[in-house]
Length: 164
Image (tube, rainbow, N blue to C red; front, top):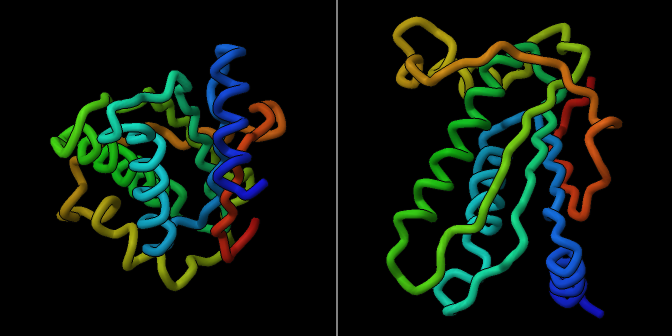
């Protein structure tokens, strides 16, 4: 059984049980991670769209941010990527089907990195510095939410280069 068949079998089982697809995305929110998060979000909300079918399974995306000093900036960039991916998927007019339900929950490491990784100013200053292009993006306080209490995951993506 290949990966696609395993995914479809898991989706069928979840649909029958009325459960959501649980996805973990571990990241230090570098630009390539942000692109991967955008693509993953598009895939999750567009499953079945354009094929005249829709999935009955909603998705719950857990984004775990680790290895950065500027957790607020990383969190804002991750939230922005997800909201833009959802908006992009919703505006597609290439076929039938509606966007799938997606809940996103954000977790941050209990330990901040002692020093900023080299990607942080390039990726986060537009969100955190005065006069930054996306400074108006709504910010919520960073809350540490342990993952061990979250759930079991059906899919896991680990893109972080730095762990703390």
